[in-house]
Image 1 (cartoon, rainbow, N blue to C red):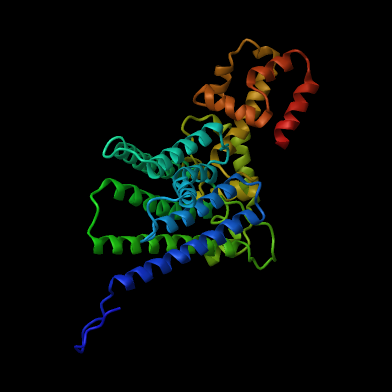
Image 2 (cartoon, helix red, strand yellow):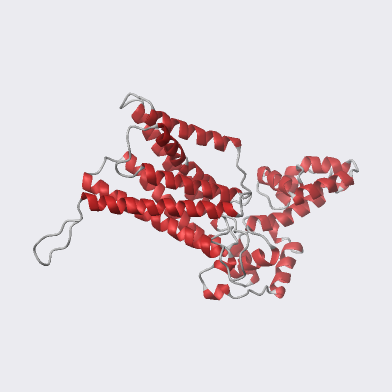
Length: 391
């Protein structure tokens, strides 16, 4: 740090001072990433969201290392490993967002293929001699656009599932974290597409990126430690989708008080759904349902989540729709009614979501369910139902 001999002048940071700050922040980032990955895997190794969260933290640690000033170039074999872990982060982040905000999400083989393709292309460009500006520059720009697109898809996942999410903490806090990480990844992708800044601007941008990532990870680590250090005593680590939405770890003092499920309101809701079949209405939302019941929307969300155990409004509606559909499929008087008609009558807008929801609930397709029921094989149907409910 250089200082002026004249009184009243502000000390000026030289290049070595900026480098020290940058490396210090990156060291903190790596430490926080390892802490988060360890906490995520400690008690929830069987959780898809937790495993993806741990992988995301490790990729952030690798990115902090390889993007540090004076990191050795050209790439050595050990640095290519760090590069592979780092450039997997955007795909992992997108998958983590899917697993966190979509309770029915499953990792598919093609997700692994996408990850392998992006990592392979990045290593190919960085680790082997490629003629520039083509095709190396074209591949590099394509990867930057892919990273930006995946970040935008993650944000879109947050927005598209926000209204149906019944977990208050997950809706409020996880959206903030997701948007923050999306902005960080998007900024990194755009920086590769724009002209490089000057040396001083590059140093300050590096410090700003490291500081922003440090803040995001610090907040996430604090939430994880808070979730695992409850007054009730040590217990299993909440799933990655619940860490910021756990009712016992909310920031509001009012929400920390025990919540009483209103039995009268619960009975009104059950009557509206089971007797009046409100779930059949086209475009039914939690807002319109709360208006009909005459209660604030947040109270209805709390009632469905805590009183009936549903994390998602669509899952709540599908419970009634599937029950009516099962009754129609086993009714001999409706054997000629098409499955699509039954799906539409129960409130589904198309056959695809109906088939997926029905199989998730019964472990059978609607056609298989009807065929077994019409054949008089009630026992096989019941057995498959038990398997589907236990899975």
